[in-house]
Image 1 (cartoon, helix red, strand yellow):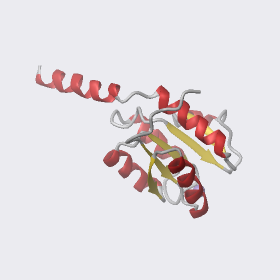
Image 2 (cartoon, helix red, strand yellow):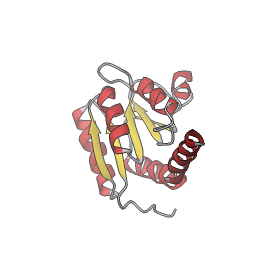
Image 3 (tube, protein in one colour):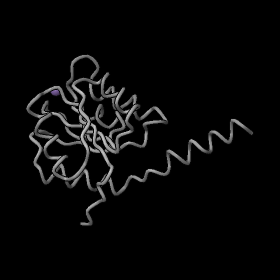
Image 4 (spheres, helix red, strand yellow):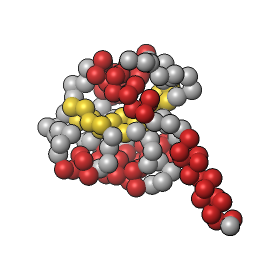
Length: 147
Ligand code: MN
């Protein structure tokens, strides 16, 4: 498969388990992506808006708001809806579960997560995502407001 151009691209990891955070960060950094880290959903939402990451890896069980709730919020917001989100959990959920589907996430990985599995999925989602639509949509909205 064609490897995506990782230059200047970054992945936001929302994960409260320190070992998983270190593991995922190392996997993502080894592929050439920049890494942003959030230990809870609230911080993850802030970083998603402030830093416009190119992809988000979202744990489900987090202190406070769950990762599925945070995913739904990001997907309901036009500013962040186009950021691909990979939901991960060790808690017996599958990608077919209604609450996972309802979150609007782009992909689901059950822990433990293999390196090749994660890297391949990130590559697929990165190649699929194009940065233009959000920018174009903002231009259209700006024009609509000024018209
Ligand atoms: Mn967790």
